[in-house]
Image (tube, rainbow, N blue to C red; front, side, top):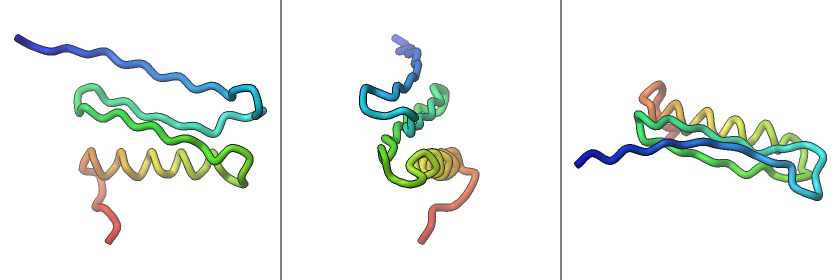
Length: 68
């Protein structure tokens, strides 16, 4: 029996923030589902969550080596 999944992602600013700082990455073929919650209200929270997603996805997909 084969197991098949479908994924979707969405983010929302919520009721307290004007800008959404969350980030997500989905790769069903690789079985990777990442979510980073932004640092709501802190400087560069969106940059931090996007950088974390990019870095982890690159490492898990074999595009770079993890930092020491």
